[in-house]
Amino acid sequence: MSRNDSAKYAFFYVLSLVALVFMSVSVGIIFFQLINKVIIDLINDYSSSYNDGSMKFAISAIIISAPIYFFTSKQIYQSLRKGHLDEEAGVRKWLTYLIILVAIIVMIVWLIITISGFLNGELTTRSILKAIVALLISGITFSFYLYDIKREHIKDKKDKVIQIYFYGALIIVIAAFITAIFTADSPTETRNKKLDDRIINSYYQIDSALNSYYTENDKLPETLDELKDDSRYFIEEGLINPITNEPYEYKVLGDDKYELCTTFSSSNRDNIRYEYGPSMDTMWVHDSGYQCLSQKVMAIDNMEKPVMIR
Image (cartoon, rainbow, N blue to C red; front, side, top):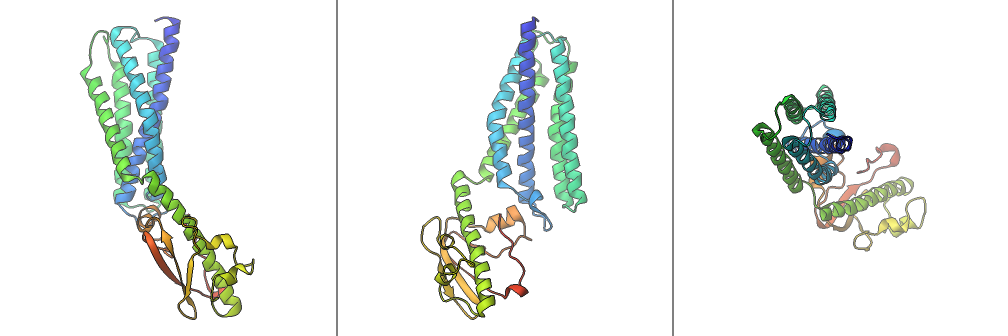
């Protein structure tokens, strides 16, 4: 192998290593998030609950990294079979062992994270499933490259074991990718939820302003215009739906009870269950479409500070 060839195959090996890391970690993220979504943990926190953003990162990473990995790997193994790359070449041995080392490090990190979650009270079933996923992905990578580096007489031979690993990995990646596509929210759904979150944030600010007003006046205002008249309470922009550009409808239902009505683009019921967990604040649970949500006010001295969504 010439010096130029050595540089070329070093490039292929390093590029395949980088793509492999992104691809394998992304597959792991997809399976971890599926476990989080299917098995709800009553004591989970944000880091151990389903996260649609993590799922979309994994989808994006697979779209970019998977074609690069399978292309570079194909170039490497075709070159080995045709004799363009010597099986005893230093670049092959050094970089293959580097890939094996990275696979071991990734496995160790995943297992540490999984065990840490278990020790912090995560459900045993979830911890076991995540440990199995981490071991399978890292084990497949480790065993493949260990087998590859120990092969002899590679030239002019099609290795069935290599082909099984290659196409098996391709099937796993495609299956994970398709599963993630059907699990994650579409871009339109994501945009709608973010717009609805702006409404919810405004609702929290309105609720805080109403509680302040109630504390000072021992009654609720007749209209929200009374809040914007005093800059201590609110600003006018916070009283308008950012989607419809219509003002929020406000109704007094009693001495200490009120109702806010507007149109939502989506429902947040699944968000609260999957993304935040059952312990998350459920003050403003809503469905899609026109919704009226009622709340009670309390004097600020006697109430807890509201928890903001996102």
